[in-house]
Image (spheres, rainbow, N blue to C red):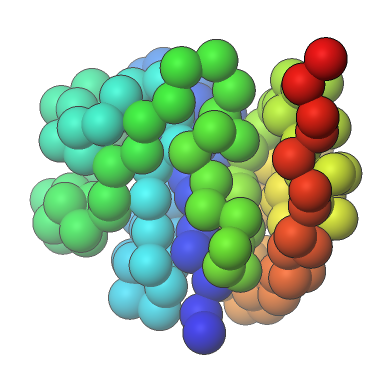
Length: 147
C-alpha cells in the first residue's frame, strides 16, 4: 500500500507568503500522481478547497488542477489528530509542536515526519522528487487509561 502524504503549506510548499517554494509545482504533481495526498494545514479545516483559495494564485494553473485532487483533513488542537495511524504515511512539515512529536514517538513513526527547512536548503523539494522517503509502519498503541 502506498503511503498517504500529508502536506503542510507554509514553510513547505511556500517559501514565504508571496512565493511558492522552489520545485513546489513539480513536487505537488509528483505526490498527487503517485500517492494519496491530504492537506495538513491550518488553511483546511475539513474543506479541501480552502487551501487552493488561499494560495492557488502562487502556483501554475496546471499545479492548481493537481491541488484539487488533494483531500481535506480536520483537526482541532494537534495536526496528528488528522493522521490515520492504521496505514503508512508521511508528513511533510516544517515544524511540529511537542505534543504532535510525542504522538509520533508513541506510534513509533517519528521518522515519518519529513522535516522541511527551506532556509537551509531552498531546493529541498527537488530532493524528494528524485528520492522519495519510505515510511515506517505505525505501531498500534494501547490507549492510556484515564485516571
